[in-house]
Length: 224
Image 1: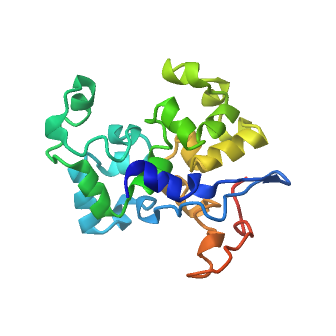
Image 2: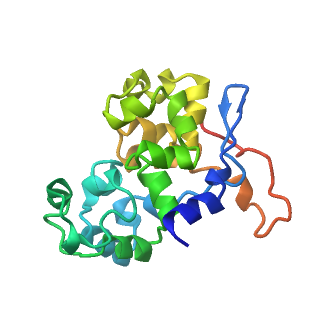
Image 3: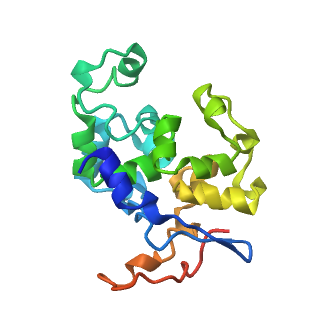
């Protein structure tokens, strides 16, 4: 299925999220977090570490989200490095020998949906793409609009810590696959993996393998 087909197929991730009693709820049909990405470097398998290194990760960039430049780009951006004609993009992968980064992502366990949401948070999309899948609605709650997005002029929310966001802003950020720790993006994994409310909860839509009606209960300990 192509990029847009996949996005539409999951119905914009079905992130019809609600604010209740100050807690952030993740939608029952939300894409499951790629948990293999959220582990300490030393806990990753040798195969996963080798794959990660081939696309520019080292221990430091693996354990601090957003510090490997490739995470600023969508899943398919570097599908054919040899054919790139954008100097800025070329500079991102100048020290990477792999021609098809997308194939490496797939071998690691990502697909387009999980990478673009949990790793890139749709930041590489243009506004028309966000609007096509109604993802713009989350960004609008955070203060973005088409003009500010295309001119890269971030709103006030961009400078806020998670704790400073309003409840509606937190909910919008959750719709873009942020957790409190990945929104703030200041601490390496060893300092928060074991205490992350989201990572230490069971995603409610995974409680049963093939539910006829997806469960509607939020995680036992949703992020606050």
